[in-house]
Amino acid sequence: MELTDAQPANTKEKRAAEEPEISVAKESKTEENREHNEATTSGGEAEQRVEEIPIGTSLPETKRETHEEKKRDLSVPAVGVKKEATQISGTLDRYILFGRIGTGVTAEVYRARDKLTDTQVVIKKVFSDKYSYMKKEVDILGKIKSPRIVQFHECIYLNGIYYLVLESMGDTLRNVISSQDFPLTQEYHKYFMRQLLQGLAFLHKNGIVHRDIKPGNLLVNTNCDLKIADFGHSAIMDKPEMEIKEEMQTIWYRAIEVLMCSKTFTSAIDMWSAGCVFAELLDNKLVLDKNGKMVSTSRVLFPGSSIHHQIELIVKTLGMPSESKWPGVSKLHWYSQITYLTYHKKKRWEDIFEREIDPLALDLLDRMLEYNPEKRISAEDALKHDYFKG
Image (cartoon, rainbow, N blue to C red):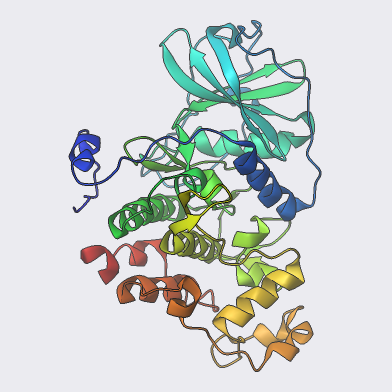
């Protein structure tokens, strides 16, 4: 079976005759804890809580602050970008909560129903001290529109707390690749990666770098449509290379140049993160769980516990970076502290994944995990790779 660029409405039915259907996984404490661990590893912040919203009740009516009152100027090309932020009439009383999906460093996330349209939505209850993250997400999502980017409806302010209302997709790629009764086939690998790269190509073309690509921030619905979400760490690129001024990217998916303390970054950091996601898709396989049941799972490629450990895992897998392949690497802060790894050579991907993998997939993976960010493949070029032509 071959999946096309544009997922047809009846894909689910066509798929059913050939393969088991991907279901929307139920939220579990295990996945919730894993997402929290990824988030806290990035910023080193402890989990925070705010007053719980009663489940199954309507939210109180309040005055809504529009994006026009809160947004800053965001100049990006006109292709696929709206001049004004999305405006939805109505207030919080139109939403009824079903339950909390999970809690991250910046917000609690709830599944809810819009009484006005009778559709499911997701509401992010942003912690009061995380306004800058929320504002950045509203600024960006309110101005861009793409089938590969989660749709933003409105932002509502109540008693010092901001509520972001977003479209409901159903699940995350993290759950999809680790909660099925069967491993994903190569067709699914290609289909998910093509959509991720389409989303990144759109963002980069419009001067936006996501800066926190990971399976937990990639939303998937029952038709296997994938959309990029969570733009709280994103940056607007007003020049090709930007100065690093804040923490970015969950450590497991953080680009090597950021880990090594480069003073600048480019859109190439998203491609490194996407490469780590690709590796998890390729690693997806059946294993025996603690209850003796065969389940589909996937390993994180570089599950470091600290900056030093993360760099060490990368070098032990990809080999020691050199000046000949990455000019200037020896001048980065961490280089002098990893010289003991000089003897490490690049491992074979087949040894890492413990099975044979499509050579074209491995070639693309190598190009996405290229040490030198100037030589790392772009999202636009990755979409033209022979891997997607088969």
